[in-house]
Image 1: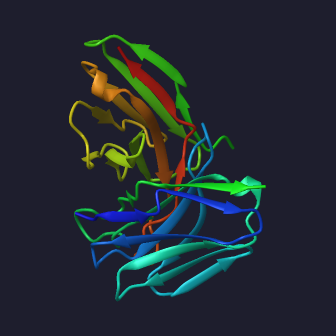
Image 2: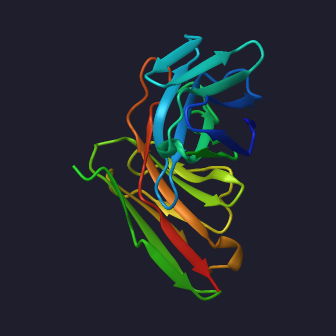
Length: 117
Length: 116
């Protein structure tokens, strides 16, 4: 099955600096890569996702890049703010209707981001 | 539109007791999922369902059973709770996949379960 590795496990940045979180995946058939943000005691919420037919996607201060050849994808947060402090999870999924493992998200173990004011 | 809801929010069980966690969604989603979240382990899939009356095993199914008798509800059962099942349980749902891609999963608020 799919295996997703996420680094680093903890990350501290000064307010206003950029933060980068990296993930690698093992299943070359995976084609959907979402990122979730989870604040303390809350549910995971989707912040951005990318599908394998694009290499980069941006939404205001966050961006995700995908390198299918190397099987890795990254989350970039620019101009970090204290409210960005949370645990971030990457995930990967096989194509829908592709048999065993499709529809399932395999998550990385998370990165705890702390933005220091 | 409440989205995905879970009951109860908290529960304490003794070893060997049984309980059922209820997940409900009002978005008419076909797919529903149960995850457990443990410190440092991320989210791990327990069971999932791709439609009413269907269920399938995920990554960590042992000790759990599920049922999807109605499209909007997905039940997770623990027949004989063990301390190793102490965790936060999240339910999620998603729409029918389009264009060959898995669709976005929306999570419920979670149930914190402690087994003594």
